[in-house]
Image 1 (cartoon, rainbow, N blue to C red):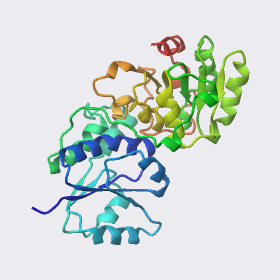
Image 2 (cartoon, rainbow, N blue to C red):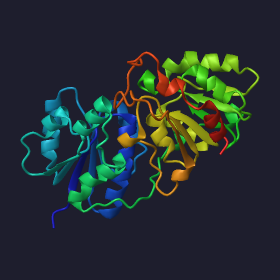
Image 3 (cartoon, rainbow, N blue to C red):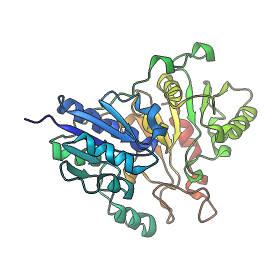
Image 4 (tube, rainbow, N blue to C red):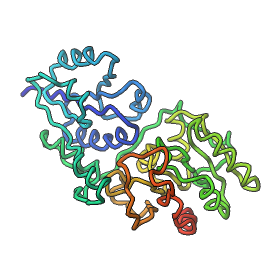
Length: 329
């Protein structure tokens, strides 16, 4: 029998790629002799170090024709397109030898939900839908969690931060879109009565908000690491924390792969889109906070830089007391 040589394609973004790790683990464990390749953008090369279930990483080149030639030369038996957009279809256009299976994006149903608030989406996590695309290979979801591996060189020493493992709260400030970010003034109210140390994570865009939090809560131990860590370094801080307060963002999905309680705050996006923290068997360790009953939500499947309605009620009306209470579970 010909050895199975499989290409998995997912070009972006952090959260979407992290969620493919579950599908890759199932694929590796259920087809241990298969040769598994993964294609993504160069910007995610560092993150893929944390996935031990692939044999070869292929990075998308600026000239898509070169990547397409590289794919053709590999003579894959199967190509599983977990991105399924115009670019990935161009990458595989005209290939006749491999069996090609594409992830169902359900864009029409997402449009119905965001435009008319008609929810026809299946009650399935995107991980289940990714693994559905692998069914052509006989792969099924075993409903186990998947580990996120951090190289020792990327582990953050808590001693250097004067912190103890599991004795601090990590707050993820960042998100790609502003309508997915928990506003700083609400976060300050949430943390006002929190007694343990707090570590702030985010990129350079979050430095100003982090500084404001430090100054406003000067009597508390607030450690600002925004803009100072790599993605894997941030993952290390999360792994060692006692709990995590996070927006709907990539680090939320990484946090779900560790044994740490999660409190996630949702703005314009909704969990029913299938991108909530994936933690099979330990769902009770995840607390989701969202403002229900808004006729404008969800306004997008990803996010906006400003609230289209101008009121930002999906965040401004969050139950701050309930969020603060859940930080201690």
